[in-house]
Length: 373
Ligand SMILES: [Zn+2]
Figure 1 (spheres, rainbow, N blue to C red):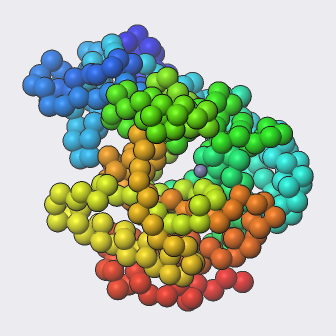
Figure 2: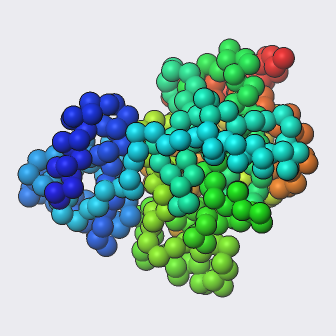
Figure 3: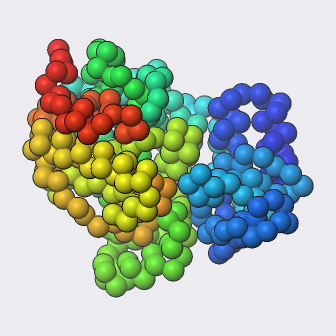
């Protein structure tokens, strides 16, 4: 708990908003931790090992967190640990240099990593900066993730979209956060890997609530312990995932689009289809209308694909965020530009849709109006 006091102290001294947000994130460090209405008060819920929270308030060794959607409570900080070390800024230039060499090798001529375009406060296992950028300032926010699985050659889509946005910022009506390379270590290997450098499938390691009970069991039974899908020993053990969770908690996106390959479809996950009240039903209807619109215009088949313990889809189900998983038709890097051309309009249309305000008719209006020069 001492560490928490030190962090709050440092945050106060630095007075830097970025540090303040990042510095107060904690991970649950015990199998199950009780959540109380107030310190030592009535039991109102539970949180689980590996779950990550921003501490909103601190009082005598207790921290207030948002433990479920719209629900706050207090946990004892004795059973938590700080999230990975956060710097005030990780150098990006040498990383961009390395990336550009790799882009050259792949003959990705249309994209470049310019260090001025990106920011990073966190690092991967091998100390690569976990880069992202925020474009636009009007709510709501969409989060775009590329290269969670780095053998799928998807960073092209994120870098290319960013390049287009720099040229034509007017294409965007709302804010978008882009994390173009969630798994940089796997991408920078000569033989790219699906997993991160520690052999963990990031899309099975996110802190979903039943992780401890199901993740390894599912991996052994469903995947016969296939190394490409190893979920790790504890939920959210990987810095790359702590980075993703932090982006979600910091920017509270109304939707997340994660680009993968090569299954050639668009999948929507939202509450696993089990909507419980009218506001959830409304969000689901609009989220689905957007998915169908995207599918129709970009010719990606809409498929209701299942979620997995520790996957982003399951995480989105639990936190009521629509997750769009876009699977490109192949991981063939020579086709990256062609795939981008087929996607760009639908991506902008999705970013510009406000799932809270617009009606489904507006969502379905054709995105041909988007003029890309
Ligand atoms: Zn994938």
